[in-house]
Length: 245
Image 1 (tube, rainbow, N blue to C red):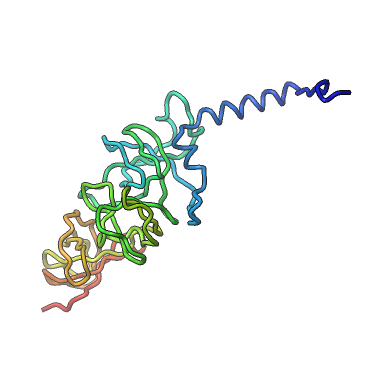
Image 2: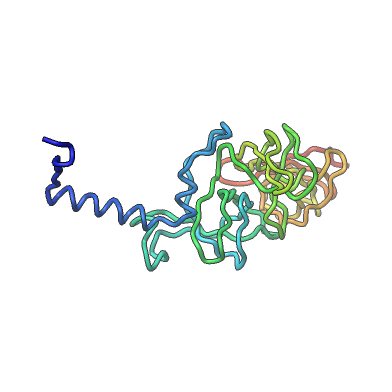
């Protein structure tokens, strides 16, 4: 029998499976398909999280984004490409409200659209200026998508990827420590918002303009003193870095 005479048949169940597979793949947005492809640069990336852009702007590739809420795929009308019951976080542009931050995948996401982001692991990220060097810390800054050197450390730099695109590589981890300064006398064993988050070059820091979250202090702290805020037991806790007068 010639090769041209060879034939192959599929049973009805196999045809249905092929159809479901094709429909599933074709329904995935282009941005999601790109996120499934591992980069060749050799860094290790965690599984992505799905998000909806609620910022009112396009979130750039590698952008720092503030988590503003959480939902399932009930909002993904007209396609359900993310899968039934898929958890989805909502994001906004960083502002004066200090919060939880994630990094966008390497595709710009329009306002109202869905994308993939990361909350931990090795990632490319958008920075604002200068030349990121290995070991430096970059973090969120109010009113911008890019990370800024000396702000609360969200990413520790591995190296520079593209100066023209202002993209660097680094290790992403949750922010659990902040430098602060008290703005009023703090009573022992009390929660307070009388402090500021300070950022910048070590020894030359200044008020970041973030609104500091409420934190608990176990000791009395005078006004105008540097403090350290650390995340323990589901809350921010203040420690003195300078002695009371």
